[in-house]
Amino acid sequence: MKTVTRLDLTDARLLIAGAAAHAESIGVPMCIAIVDESAQLIAFERMEGGKVTSSTIALDKAFTAAGAKRATHEYGTASQPGAPAYGINSAIGGRLMVVGGGLPVVWQGQVVGGIGISSGTPAQDQAVAQAAIDHWSAAQ
Image (cartoon, rainbow, N blue to C red; front, top):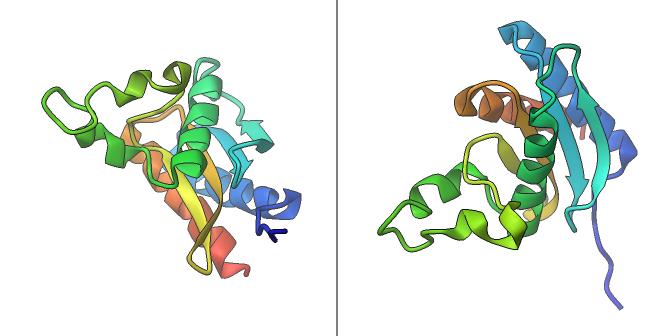
């Protein structure tokens, strides 16, 4: 038997609040996806004005961050031609994301979920994801 620590709906709402606040401060409405440690969706919000096409991207960023237990931007360099993980972005039916905006959510050294942000530039998406995690961490 194994005990699993994972994000719950209260955690997801805190993460979304932190992400939305930062997105509003930079003037970029975002799509925000929160998944548990097994990459299953807990909560999703498309802010007013968030790109419709970014909904799926945010979900896949969160899926990648939790499932692979690493930030999506870390795959960017590693997935380029000649790099060790070249072509990995086509893995898992194309769901594995290689651009910034997906971060694992870590609690006591363990990945307990993931967050995916999309609608801005990769740097904006990543900054909003980090702000969400910082907001959530401060509440723990």
